[in-house]
Image (cartoon, rainbow, N blue to C red):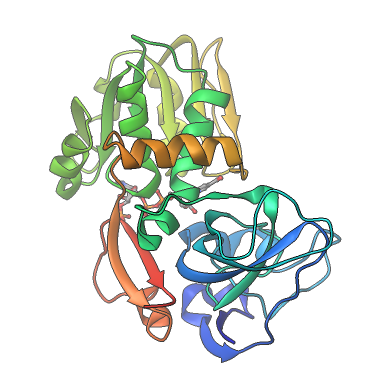
Length: 305
Ligand SMILES: NC(=O)c1ccc[n+]([C@@H]2O[C@H](COP(=O)([O-])OP(=O)(O)OC[C@H]3O[C@@H](n4cnc5c(N)ncnc54)[C@H](OP(=O)(O)O)[C@@H]3O)[C@@H](O)[C@H]2O)c1
């Protein structure tokens, strides 16, 4: 089968190549999915699971991309809950070969049914950004009606989902990002926007929760805009500062069938808009992940036309 592989962490996406790889077999509790569309998150080439297995053994060349939408083509021994021919979407294990390929083996529990009226391209854009937003806001952030949330990178893949889900949950949302992202963040539902290039983050009053997707200096300064007892949720690595008398939580997104169901339900009824900036074929995937100009939103690879 055709697949994109990486072998050298130092060169990032520039090291991606399109090659022939053997088709995967379904182990116990796995399904093999014929991938129709695949997503990739920019940080994954820096995560250990891309390069080594759970025992720390080199597993290169590895296939990146861990979001997928496709059709089940085989079941492993003991696999229940899904059937051959079923449309599915989900998030695959970070320490196994991923979804920038024609087929992928994945544990059945990491997938959810994809309704027939949701396009594969849309399905592949939801797992990482949708689950990360859901888990950060509701599981780790414990957001409540009437609370205020500062969402960094509100025009991006994760931030646009956080903005919409926080609004639906009854929060007041302040989005941040680059100057050019203002209107996009407002269109996704942010009630205010802080331009991180020109405005002072410190002018934001005490918020209940910051959802940080950027980290570094922005992450550190964010702790100071959280009211006493508030929460800093970050997906950009361990928080370097914590709010006064508050909580700082960093987490890595996990697959969850029930949460995937909640997310796709909202997409179907129009409550949640996905944020796709570019769609390319698998043959063009390497170029698509090494763009010559800035892409707003997620890049999705349409593996089968
Ligand atoms: N821990 C986890 O489980 C987890 C899960 C998902 C994602 N992540 C990581 O979280 C990060 C965000 O993911 P994503 O899919 O939302 O990426 P994305 O679509 O690129 O969104 C990030 C947004 O933040 C903006 N931004 C970044 N740095 C900025 C700065 N210094 N000032 C102003 N705006 C800035 C980006 O603008 P530009 O495009 O102009 O830079 C973009 O609009 C990635 O590093 C990803 O790997 C972690």
